[in-house]
Structure formats: C-alpha cells, structure tokens
Length: 235
Ligand SMILES: [Zn+2]
Image (cartoon, rainbow, N blue to C red; front, side, top):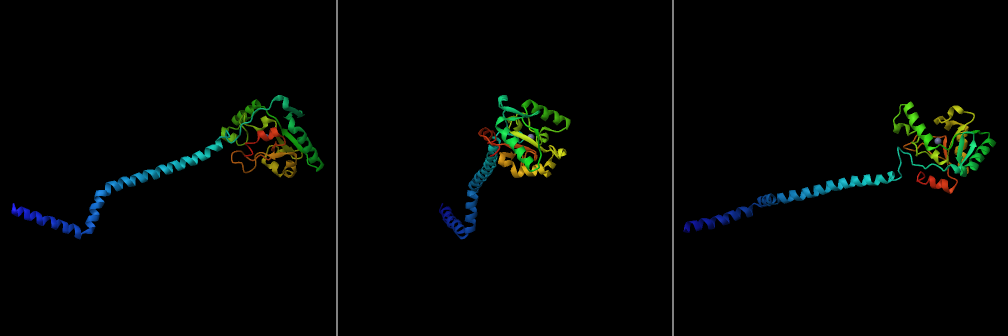
C-alpha cells in the first residue's frame, strides 16, 4: 500500500512536469480536443459563404427579371391593335393613325422642297396581316422564330398595329426599300436631320440588341396617345 502510494505520488508530479515542460504538446492536445469544434465552425462558415454566393447569383437573376416585366417576346414589345375608327387612308394601300396623318404628309412636303422624295411603304398593319407576314415568311425563308423576329415582329408585337409606325423609302432608289442600304440614301440622311421636327423617331437603331437595325422604320410620338403607346419602348 505504502509503495503504491509512493508510486502514485511520483507519477503525478512526473506527468505534470512533462506537460508543463512541453508547451507544444499542450497546444497539440488542445488542438486535438477542439478540432471537431473548429471543423464544425469552419463548415458552418463555408456553408454560409456558399449560401451567400448562391443568394448573390440569385439576386443578380432577380435584378434581370424586371427587364422581362415589359413582356417582350423575342425582343418585341406587345402592341394593341388600333380601333378602326382612328385609321385614315393616306394612299391607296396605306392607312395610319389619324393623329399622325398631318405630320407625316407635312414631312413629305417639306422633304420635297429639299428635292428629297419620300415614299411610304407600309403603315398600319392588322395583327392578322402581321400573323401572315411573320409565319408565312418565316417558313418560306426556313427561319426559326427567333431568327425571323430580328427582322419582323410576331403578331401582336408590331408597332405597325398601333397605326403610329411608317416604313419609308427613297423614291429615287427603290432598290433600297426595306434594306439596310436605305441608310445611304439622301432620303434617310434627310430624315435623320429633320424627322424629329415632325415628331418621328427611328424605332430600331443600331444599338438594339434584339432587333436588327431598320433605317426605314419610323414611329410617331407627336401625340399623348402615341407617347403612351411607346412609353415602355422609350424606357
Ligand atoms: Zn416597319
């Protein structure tokens, strides 16, 4: 008993001494004890970081959705069809919104004074006609909808159905009708300089990322109704 007691008395201080003298091993022991907690802590922060990244990318997506709140289809905004009683015939095959008639005809007259001869190619188009244009031409040209939408609006999405859009050509260069080359005509150069005086604006310029550049396509923004119709497009 006495011996055992002595051994125990010896053992403990010896163990204590070793521990006290080796601070590295204390550290290692503590590390071993705490390592599960550290691992837990680390995983917790790692998970939070991953979640934040996910939320971050989600918020980027959410930030992009407001763009779709304008209800575009293949880059085109929806337009209602103008009531028939607001349409007037300005030429055998060309009808436009009554609000825009005077301004449009005046613009052509003023251009003539500068020896520029504007031709009106297309004004109001019904949704039915747009339907034919979009779907028949699409199949003739063997194009997919998205491809076709770069050059023609899907039915219900054309500015032409509002009566406030007009396609213009140069009477001296008819080969440029509906062609990008129209931009090189005197008529186009005149329009760029003067159309705003008559409240006309180029709808699809070169910066439009969805729809191809259409130098011949102009829209009227000279009445409250027209401004309302194109409010989203102007944002
Ligand atoms: Zn057009």
